[in-house]
Length: 47
Image 1 (tube, rainbow, N blue to C red):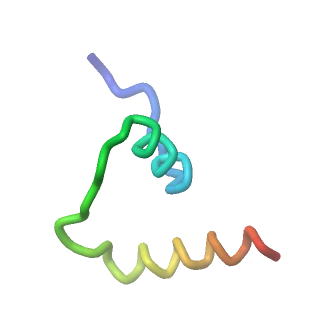
Image 2 (cartoon, helix red, strand yellow):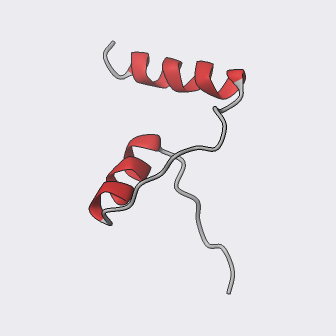
């Protein structure tokens, strides 16, 4: 078995989790750098 791709888009990941009726709770919050980049991605979608 080998990895052929990664899903990095958080909206796609959320849709997959919802479709599979799974729940996900992070054991700890993402690092500050990741939070800032996610906020920038969300903002750019509305501009």
